[in-house]
Image (cartoon, rainbow, N blue to C red; front, side, top):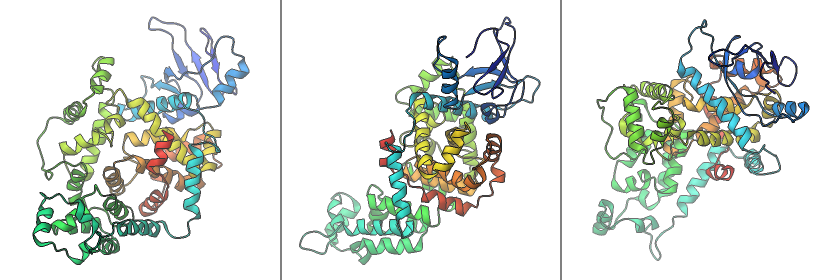
Length: 474
């Protein structure tokens, strides 16, 4: 409970959160950090930092002191501080994601019900996880068998050996005209399951590209990803095979975003102007305008968003992201405009993304989840911070690009949920039993994680997250 004129403020156990209240000044009252506590440590704040925001805890003057302590201890208290002027200036690109993460986690705790093991959505996630654990065959073989079975179900046209997929050809398409003229197909086109099996054996995304461009028939089978089986084949190769090579990646992303022509380098304005122009161009509902007008024309997340965009372009070996790729990423279903807080719908959307992660980590790592929550440390805090930067700084450049391949092709943020759970899985033994300070020291320092890229990728694809599961959580 905060009272005006109070010299010391303590929440919960004595000394757990200590603030000094200064005398009122012309600029208003000021609280300053006196003792280290979890939220301040998570924000890397120092003693003497100025308190500028505190999350809402619903109490009244008549609320018993024991009830106040119970409500506050039931979830992490979210505080936001400004560094003392004497300290070294911290760039907005580092502070802003942390502050946003604290706001998002605070909204999640207040707006959504606690998870219960016997009730959806956690019960559904637990069931999916147990099914995967009980499966005896390796996951990549199980998924490969499902893809081949789905292709086999295509079947043939009644009374002939012509594959049924030919019926879907448009008469005016090049392949439709060719079929009407010759009515002949090669062996692999007649037996697409055989073609899929050979390409799985090769296990290279580049081979899929070359094979799809070799003839119009294979282009229909491999590059027309409107077909569910073709998308599954691509996803399987990206997960378990060799990913796209660096020179091919810009064009691959361009193709995934369904931007007609091949990528060409282009001249543009400054990165900030390019990003804002792209966001305005893709924002049919005017959410960016509403957000900026509510903030006096400012876009506080612009520096963070531009930094993420530039780092991504640098990893690709480009000066900036192609405009059509950027346009695609800002829109549905990638939602980077919300991810980078360039929309007035960003906050509730981020809250739901953190809820997805909360459910999945509680299902996959129940012991770690309970330990962190018992220490007053919300794992969603780190996930929210990581996804704002697309996990830059947490992974090697090559692994980050492989993760982005999945994100862009699969058109879903579920790969980030799986990646975050995989990181916590790799760190679980080093986190269990540690106090909050030691856990944060480890999680905030990726250099000491010592996680092998291949092992982390293997852990990532092994996490069970489906679109139907996410839909149920929502």
